[in-house]
Image 1 (cartoon, rainbow, N blue to C red):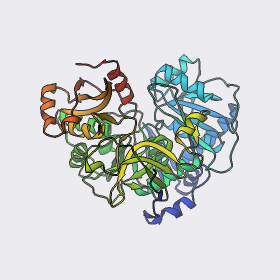
Image 2 (cartoon, rainbow, N blue to C red):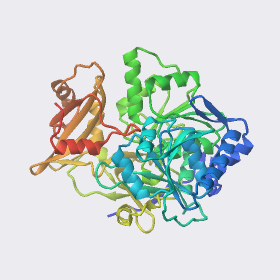
Image 3 (cartoon, rainbow, N blue to C red):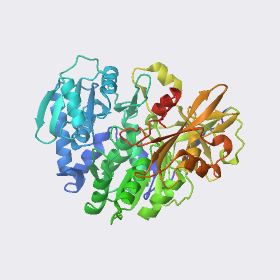
Image 4 (cartoon, rainbow, N blue to C red):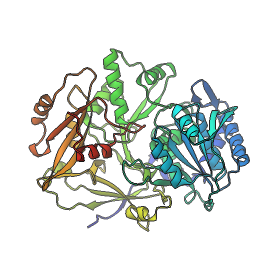
Length: 533
């Protein structure tokens, strides 16, 4: 039986009420950026390698690119596809397309040939753009597809495909109905699903989430999260440009390059996935270096669970609160985040964003007797950030999105007495062993406490009449860590039924370009018993 739905209350965000910020959202994601080009003029807007643009220059590039799209035969309602890593060309194409009511399917060029081709076949773009300057992989995909090479005077080397005869989508006047971007979900099996994100949904996150981070003129944001990932698109890219901050477009995470930028460029805002922070700690330890970040004032993690041990170590290194949040592609992505003045020792993902509706659906009895997870249920949300649906996949859309706009996140969550949200695990990742519910983040958090462990991922595997726990562990470089030591380490920290029955020690856990561990791939390995010793 469902619990009663609630609406998160209105609240003050950086001096203004959330309801005021939402009331002034424009209809297109490019509108405020072009207004900033007029009002902020010579203030820095974007840094891409050696290229530095002011807001006025960025505005001119967006308008010029919109006219270029016209000349390439791209019509309102068409879809274009970008195969890219973070760069100025991607940002400009995204915002130019917005000016022409064109949808952009943003695809990370580090995907395999098969994955890129599957997305192309589903998306059916009018043209595909490959950002060759920023990504060798993008150039290789373009060459493989026979795309024309082009030296753009401002955007650098690109490739673009021939015009395809495809059907354009209807253009909606309102930003709540018009699609701005499509982000494809990264499943390891099945058909990739194009999540249709509206202008209003992206702007809702850019305004509220950016406001909660106190983004404004003069801030310098390290944009290493892929714009092809919704966290990088809405929260980092649009959050920065909507609020007048300067965005640094970084194609790939490299710990040495990031640490250099924190010092040299005096970066003020750093957002990443937990794995990025774990690898930074590992790099500093290995190289025996100290952190120099003279202007950094805000750090946050998202995209995958943040365990308490990593949080403590990162906060100790940076002498800052490591803020946390929660979301998913289908919610543009943010559903909750810690507020800028919050100071929590726990792994809360903060309160639900103001004005969003939410409820917890009760779970079936799984034998869980721990008070820690009492009251946990499957989280449903409704609000302007919820996707329009999956592109041309009505059955998949109906499976998670109700006719009245409620999105089933598929995540198990609980709320405490202060309305702080905690994500217990994915409903499909829940392991039921001998009648007891096992939430993988609980087990991973304990394994990650070992000083020689960088990352871990826990999955379930069906065995006769039961499930067993499989742990995949990435160790610190040079560590001489064995299964016996790990078993002894967790034995005093985890109940017997939660302890892994099989261990796999790996040099590197498989991950997406954004650093999110590919648990689907690990589950497949476990099911095939393809487990490294």
